Length: 457
Image 1 (cartoon, one colour):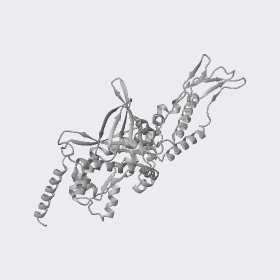
Image 2: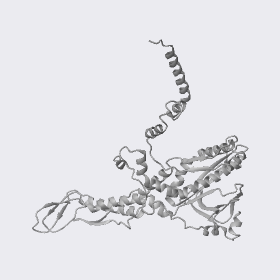
Image 3: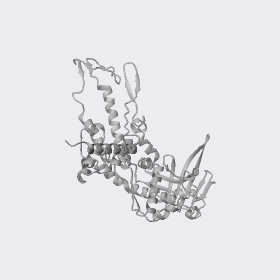
Image 4: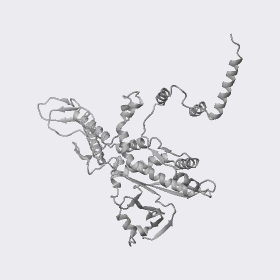
């Protein structure tokens, strides 16, 4: 459809497309505050003000302890790693030469656009802000170095993040994406200009802040070259308040330690002053008839330790994030692959939840990418029509390769799993494994000949 058909000829098409976004725009300020420890509440002086301290000589404001943790970043990193720590497994049911050739073209394209990194960046944006868009397009390259009849085109992909632009998907009543728009700011020297661009399955158009068209063209892709994905809330939204509480509690404990970690001497006399923060050996003056003694804690407050432990536990539990720190994992010791799967069950269940969005994203990517390949390389179109391509997200799991091989050998009756040539290549111990393999064969032949000529005793 054209943009005019979608907007029904509305006079102000830009605002009409904006107003027809069916979900609220993500709160970018909250998202950035969440992943930046320097912007957490514990760092805000209006929420955690400085403390007024009186000494015998002066009265002044002393800054309080401010301890912030980058736990939100850690949670997002773990989620990305478990979803895309392994390459997405891409398979097909291709049986004919034409289908196999088309499938190989698609896999080559995935390698060229570096989808391993693209997947991780896409997931990081999605988990941080709650939505992401992926734009596929073609660029000109020198002849003979690309695709198409002239071998002068390359297919590329880029990501649109809510951090840099506002995304405006337009869905119809059947929840089909009919148009996709974004608003962004571009610097031109010392000046900044706002642009609004829209894609449909037939055309592209870009307007400036005055509402004038500055670029536009029709394309023959037959579909919108955009993949838009959204999840209901940010990855850390449920645990942000718990992290705020943990940071405030830890900061308050740090203040207590600064003032009271060193024992203080209590002496007779009226109270005249209080030791400054962090001052070792500070003295308190108290009432009469009191013998001097050291003022110190009999024991650390256990209630605080209990709170810290419970907060950390709930942060990890609610966000379904495994604690794979060195201190935690060293106590596990050597465990089998099945035991590791059990240990990471919660994290893998979280991956399955994310697949509700990610599988659809990958399927849409496959549709757009194969259409582009079919347009540039017409011979592949029939091949794509006859095959089904399946993309499987494999949750990350640390593997003990020796344990895996032992298990496979046991199932295989201790027969070789790969050829001799392949084992030499997989060992990757030399710069030219093929040459080494031929040398090994020659040496084995010489050894066999010597054994044959050896006189029997």
